[in-house]
Amino acid sequence: MHDVEILTDREPSGYSRRSFIKGVIAAGAGAYAAGYMFRAPGGLAALPSAQGSVERLITLNVNGQRRPVDVLKQETLALTLRYKLGLTGTKLGCDRAECGACTVLLDGVPHYGCSTLTHQVRGRQITTIEGLEAADGTLHPVQQAVVAEGGFQCAFCAPGFIMSMVALTASNPNPSREEAAQALSGNLCRCGDYNKILNSAMRAAEYVRQRA
Amino acid sequence: MAVIRDMIPAFELFQPTTLQDALALLAEYGDEGWALAGGLDSFDWFKDRVKRPTAVVDLAGIESLRGVRPWGDGIEIGAMTTLTDVIENEDVQSRYGLLREAASHVATPQIRNAGTLGGNLCQDTRCWYYRSGWPCYRAGGNTCYASAREAMNREHCVMGARRCVAVNPSDVAPALIALDAQMVIAGRRGERVVDAEDFFIGPAIDITRMTVLKPGEVLTSVRIPPDYAGATFYFEKVRDRQSWDFALAAVATAMVTSGGNIQRARVAVNGVAPYPVRLENVERVVAGRPVSEETAEAGGAVATDGAKPLRHNDYKVALLENLVRRSLRGTEA
Figure 1 (tube, rainbow over the protein chains, first blue to last red):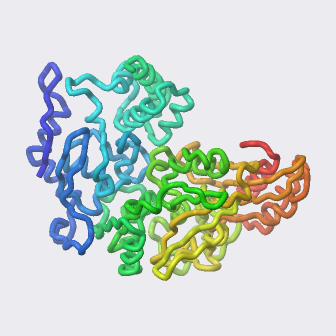
Figure 2: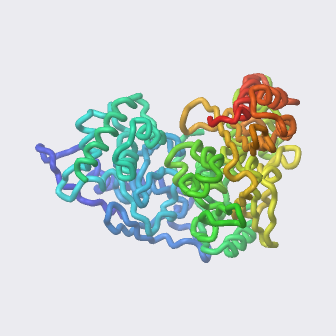
Figure 3: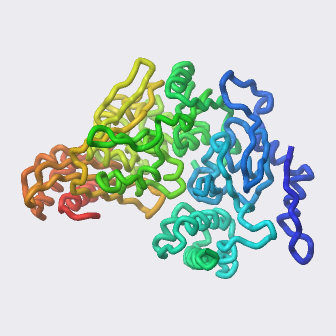
């Protein structure tokens, strides 16, 4: 049931924390997590469906790939991405549209994955942090800027912030610092690293302009 | 509140593409049904297990509920238009800047991208005792936890209370009242139109509801007449943080001036009562007077007539008077 993409190891050791975690999910530990998330009396899979309600088997367009997936009616996009598609780059912080860690792009526009039903995004282009790098592994200019600036401390919030920066620099490649702050005002950093994050955003805009 | 409790409990999900189908579904499920707009209010209720509908009717697929279109010399905005689309609309920007200002002060970019005009208007109160599922008056119980002696009520109301002291959290509601907008409501028995100020109800009318919407009814659009198009506008929202937060108090004022005199004005405030309040006494005091500091003082002085603060929120009385005063000086925020 876990349709997990195989990551090419690019690190010198041929081994990364991310690919280890993905391997664990593929190997079945993820099935435990999913079993916890999707539990219900009698099992959610067994619930009857009313006539005219949505079909559970849908195909999502995630990072340019068609991903068929069985989605519960009440399932949020963040849960589907993390626990059904193995795209754990999208983080769940508050699960209440209050922190922004789950920010993903729908048709290029930032949305909270925790507060979007997966069934509401059929037919839309979903972009997660995993979808930013080029096919050859080159990082997105925004990611390069974050690396160059050392933009985050613990970086749990980074995927959400980076998605907001991608949307910002795509629509406004020459933002003022104030405009960048506005665009990132839906993401929280509990390390309080906002100054460095804004430096990253300004450098990201610079890199995006250079590439254009 | 913000506690992750794994999945939302199961519900049936319907995604009708016509309003008629949506109304039929809501009628079929009655109290067990739930009309879903942007979800920013709904999902909190579901995740906290306080509201557990059997069937959720997602209105997002109904094309006729989206977009801004001409309505006579004014405009009509579909209730499912996102706040971002409202903000970016040229007519809203050029003629109804008050609504643009109010909508752009809602929460965060991500919430404005998903949240809708109708959802912002119809959202429930954020009183945390009520939101946490305590059996208060509004929830059908027989007490108000927020006005108890030890209660934390810094964010609660200073006027309009009747047993319940919660406030209406909408930013766009006072702007639409100041613009003299009308709400179009569809039900199984047809359509009705109510003035924006009558759309919101206080606990004296029905303590369990924020608006006149009855179960099975849907707000379909908002009509804004040309009367205050291009008027002198002022919107200010005071909150603890500069993003995300709900208003401690907000003011929306529209003034038509001529030769330095206020011909007519509409003043509405929110965050201070269980419903957005139109301050007709302020409007009466300032009508016909010159735009001046004296007029602003006179308006501010009557803004909080009859206010009854709770233990921790008397600051809202001074805050509201000052906001109304500022809004009458004829300058932008």
